[in-house]
Image (cartoon, rainbow, N blue to C red; front, side, top):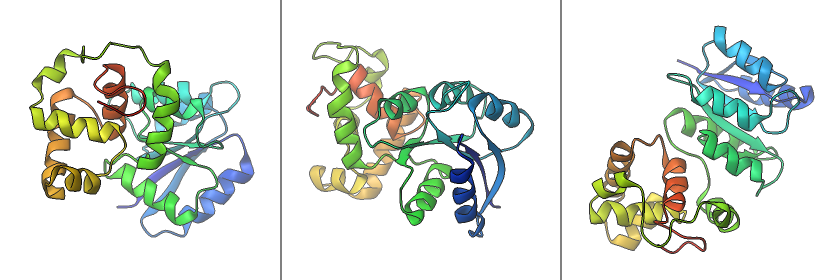
Length: 223
């Protein structure tokens, strides 16, 4: 079944460009469009959508608040934030609001398509290098909890799971974590899955945010 995509952007030309790229894919279908957040929320009430491509800067209701409202619904579609700036505070706010990742608007079509497929399958699409830069810039703005994690749920993690969580929060991919800890990628994936389940998190993006908010990892990327 085709991935049902919704385009939310106040620039008609951009939506047209994205629609053309997506329409050429046998496994994707653009089922809805909206020019602002208010319209997007209205459309979603009557349209079944798998992935929302969300602009952040829009009139009436911006992408961050729209994302927050979408993600607070039961069984919401996945949201992929599209931003003009690589290290935009809107992008970080969007991740905290529940987005599964963010990409630049001028991303090559192949990368955009890959991101949509990844988000649809449950993965997060914040590239490790971007994660590092993003968090180095914005982590100081997060609440400081001292050097010890204050989130009670973190106590449910084993030492190995906590170790994996720190590396995820530093922006390492499963392959990089496997090499660092001398584990197989499959084992790392299993650990990440258990971390998500135990902490009630949706994806790696939420792992990153929680690790910084609880002080498990501090600005600069050190646990």
